[in-house]
Length: 108
Image: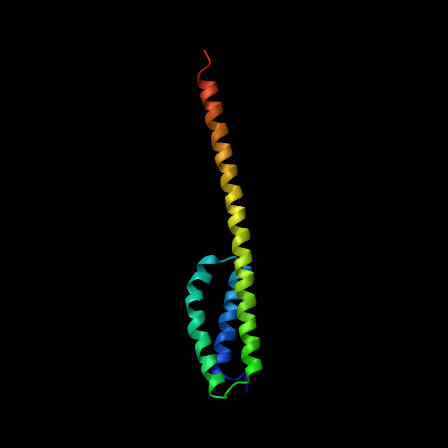
């Protein structure tokens, strides 16, 4: 019954898309899908309140959402750190190139 509920199926599908986007590190797709998360959860909570879904099923689904959020946060932090390292390397290479150009162009 619970797996057949439209709210459950919709949230499952959204989570699958978001998990694949995270696996692919497709931050643009994640940012497009993210606003859909809250509207996908609300019908699940309404179904719980109306007794259409068991509390344990809803809790389990919300736990999956939390696990995704935690994984996305961790992955985003790692991507940010990697980008910062790359930027530092680019800046270091640029500084070295400027220094070399300055030294080589000042030779008699």
